[in-house]
Length: 333
Figure 1: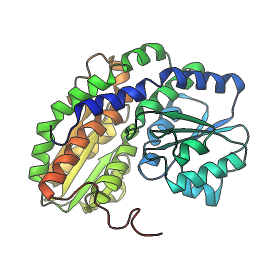
Figure 2: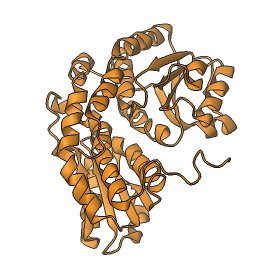
Figure 3: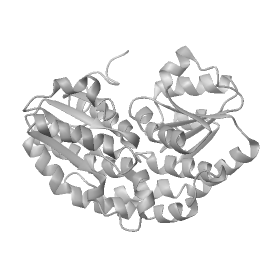
């Protein structure tokens, strides 16, 4: 597979899954001690990666869980943030400035701070109250967040079958390796067909809305300098549909939760207008060893793996490195 280091891929994912005992121990302590609310704090891609877990809590729990932008939290605050709050931060590098400032802001208000990163001596790992370390560059953080939220909801009596889910989840490195292998020809074909496309329209919903936002902004815009529009499938018919034309590249991310009909509706309309609609659907991937009732939870992980293959092939056909930046961490701002 193009630009794919299989041993590293498996090792990184396994390192995240191996955090299960520490995550469960932490969650059990939090529940036993008691807390009022949970803040999922991020910046850019790590903010978008929190949305599925706010969405999960909103659907299944009475606990106050909210995803917030680190920089906005610092300047606008939140009246519910206090000594009975818990805040989770994620950072691949452990150096994200906005998140560091948000950690300081939270700790000054007595909030218990938790950090997931791959570098034990990084500023974020050293700043939080509890640091849970995977291998360097491990991405995405959905493994850790699924285990954290699954255990939390289970302890609250809001997730039946967590132990079975967590046991099946141990196989996720191998499962996602097979996803990557299956996605490789699809990714190569998409990239070849779109090597000269300079604008993409992205649609997603439910627990894939965060990934839709992330892939649009953090990959196509930041890493490939392509123009995009991103819209939630439930909001598609309230304005953004007017941008569609016959040759508009429409990328649709389809998952397996209860919002699937909303995305199906948007896809059906898009296909009536555009001749260039691509649907990336998690149903296309077997996910051997995962029970049907848990598949929907894994949608962000599955599509992150699929679209990583697309990204590598876009990098190749467009001769535009995914590491190239003009402004991000290049200029002061």
